[in-house]
Image (tube, rainbow, N blue to C red; front, side, top):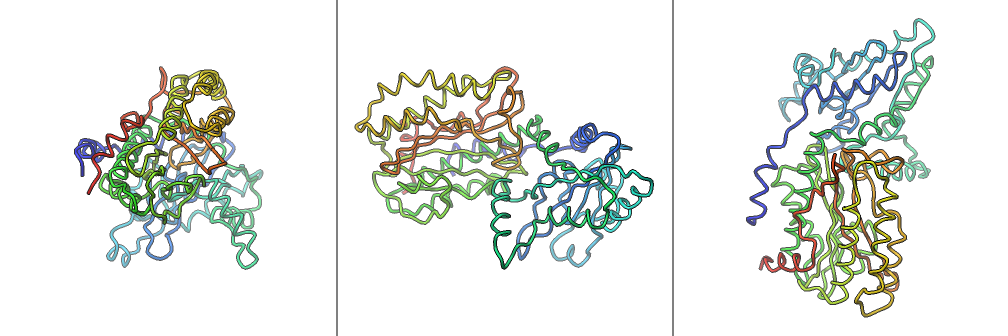
Length: 455
C-alpha cells in the first residue's frame, strides 16, 4: 500500500461505536412522536440464505445496536419502556460459527442496547395480545418499508419488490410486508400506523458519532478510488479497478460495500448505474468509478473520473474543470438556514457566464454544460446507513447534521458522454464539511497521482 493509505489507516480502525445511551436517546424520540397511547414494533433481519454473512437491518440497528438475527423490538409509548425479543441459544451454531447473543444473555443485551427487558422471541405475540384486552387497543406502529440490509437502499428494494410482485411464478411479499400482514391477521384490534416516516425523520439528521462513521467511510472510499487510479492502464478490465478499491476497503476495516461499484470506461459511464464492470479500458477514454464501503453500518458516495492513459485531452480537461468549478460553487453556498433550491439557484447564476467562455472544440460540449445548469439533482440524495438514505432534506431549510451527496454531472447525448464528480458533505453549524476534500479533484492532481501507477 502507498504512504497515503498508511497515513489514514490507523485512525480509521479506531472509530467509535455507539453506546447504550445513544440508542436510548433515539428510542426516546420515538416515544415522543408516537405518543402515550401507542406502541411500536420493529423487526430485525433474518439469517441470510446460504453462506451469507448476517448484517442487521438498519432501523433495528439504529434503535438497539443488536446484531442478532430474527430479533424484534417493542417500544411501549405508554410506559416508555423497550423490550427486545431474541431467539434462544443455539448451542450447535455457536460452537460452529461463534457465539451470537440470545435471550439468555439478558444482562449483556441490556448493557449493550439499554433496553428495559429481554424475552424470548415467542413472547412477543403474548405481549401484544395482552394489550388488546381493554379496548380501545393502543395504536400499533410498524415500519411499512422494506428492511434495509447490505446494499439495501429503499428505492432499489422497492423496485425489486415490484418486479417480484409482477412475476406470476413468484409474487412473494417482502419480509416487512409479511410481518405486517401476520400482525393484522392475528391481532386485528390494533389501529395500524406506519413507523417508517418517523424513523426516516430521525435518521435524516445525524449525530456526532454517525457523522464520524460517515467521515471514515468517505475516507476509505476516497482511498480505494485513488488506489484504482494507480492501477489504471490500457487494456485492463474494469473489474480490476474494482478489485483494487475493494482491497483498500477490506484493509481499512470495512466488511461490506455500500453498493456495487460502478466502474465504467468510455461510453459505459453514460449508463448511470452500470455495474457489469466487464469491459476493457481503452486509450483515450475516461473511466468513472462510483464506489464506497459499508463501514460499521454507515456508507458514503464518492465518484471520480480520470483518463485511462493518465493524461486528459483538451476537451476532457475543460469539461472536468467545469464540473469541479460547479461543485465548488455549490459547496460554498451550503449552510444551515438556506434551502437546497437557493444553493442550486445561486450556483447556476455563477456558472452561466462561464458556459460562454468554455474552451471546447465542439458546440455539443458547450450545450452539455449549459444543460447541466438546468438539472435540479446536483444536490442529490441523503447518505447515511444506506447510499440513498432515508428522509428528504429539500423540503425545508438545511440544518446542521444533514448529510447528502453533492453530485454535479453533465450529459452529451450525441457522443454518449457523461462527466461527473461526487462528494458527500455534512451541514455544520457554520457551513459545510466535504468529507473527501483531501482527494484529488483537479485534473493536474489526478494526473500526478496516476504517475504513481503500478507497473
